[in-house]
Structure formats: structure tokens, C-alpha cells
Image (cartoon, rainbow, N blue to C red; front, side, top):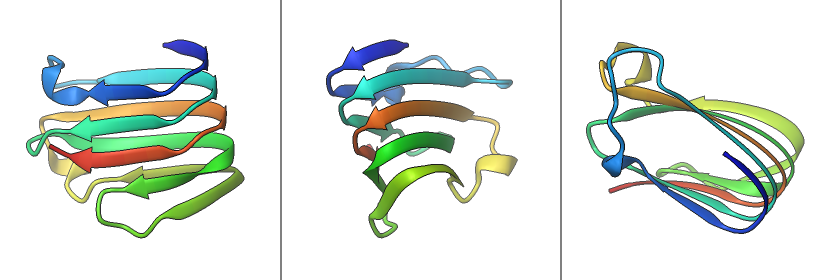
Length: 99
């Protein structure tokens, strides 16, 4: 998915997940991204951004300033239902919540 600007919401409860290599790549210039993660799905999130905040589930908000962050849910490596999201952006906040 490629976006120049705008806010996006990914509802992962509406996505068919297979038992192997589920990868979503998002490239965007400006705008916030909200990821809604179902209870039975585990996530590996890789973010590369110039400026923004990361709110990942119940963890404290992390400020991102020209950096790359790799973060995953607790059971990502053992789960049969998992997805990896690679997000590359210039400016924008990222929020991950459970549905």
C-alpha cells in the first residue's frame, strides 16, 4: 500500500490469514496509522519513520525521531496466526490496539 498523505486504519479482523509468511508493506508520506489487531492474531511491527509517536497495545507511548523500531507481541514467534507489518513513513503516529 502506498499513500502520500492521509490517515489509515487497518482492520486485521477482516483479513484472511494463512499459516505462513503474512507480510503487509505500507509506504506513506504523512498521516497517522491505526492497526486494529484481533485477540487471536500476533503481530511483528517494523517501523521506519522520521517523526511520530508509537502507541503499541499497553506499552507506554514511544517517541520516534528518525529511527527504525522492531516490536512484536508476546507470542508472535509461537503463534500459527501471525502477521508482519512493515511501515515506512515520514511523519505520522502509529497506534496498535486489540479488538
